[in-house]
Length: 362
Image 1 (cartoon, rainbow, N blue to C red):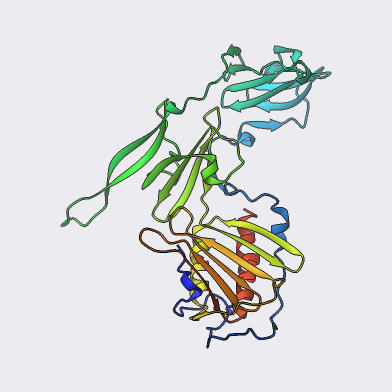
Image 2: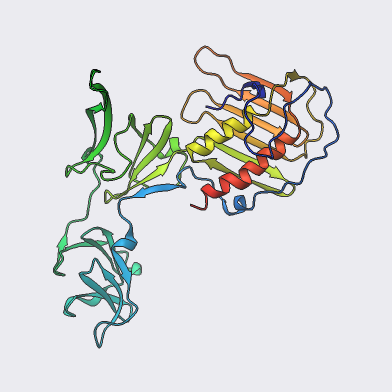
């Protein structure tokens, strides 16, 4: 969590040439606002509905790895659009779709289904004309292009379990073995989620709801996992395909001129960088007289996500900082104003524009 209590932090190392200097004194009335040039971060205009599941880092089922578009027609007399897993071709006759094997033999006539898509490795989802309101049907296939009907896949949460394992850290020969607990998600077929990638052996795993994550992405199961201070979410669709997302460490919203927007902080290194930036702002005592101009530009930062200790800091362009610290345990909630050097505001706007914009490009 960022040490934002009271916006009063000891001066630390500078984090970039645009950082503000430390606040020298507490003032009852803010000076006239004369700041370096800054602008509203354009990338925020593209974020209409912020979602904490916005930065995937691992996908178990990437459709592009299994399905390719057909650029040259392989068989005379057929209009093929896609090749699936190097085993089947999707072809069209009017509005209907059918299937050919790699030798050009029809294995499914184009007279029933208007859509054929791959829903998981080795399984097709076939849809009839939407106006008929008929349920989707499913077929399994093999490398030889043979297809067969299968029952509708059913997602069962019990098919995903949390497994605990004792592991050993390498130590010097004259020391005792260092043991630690690692946790992984395992699916009913014995597959360890994330196996073969860096996204395994978690310090903590818990099942969570979509509401607790504040996401609109319609998955069938959500898990919050943690390794050290890094947070991720593992999300499963109804076919047990899963995506791993960076977790949210905080939220930033701002108003600059006519521009207004917000986004999550989704990278732990960026979050640590923001921590250092705010520490560099220096100390400032509480004041009783906030700015009278409610139309000033401002930056608001919420931190402490995933904990009971939430801090919200709002800095306006005149340097006034309003802190709301909800507190945790025996701590009492606190709300108060302080004054920072006005260039602290500019530093935060530039940090959002230069650093967080890169998160949303990835």
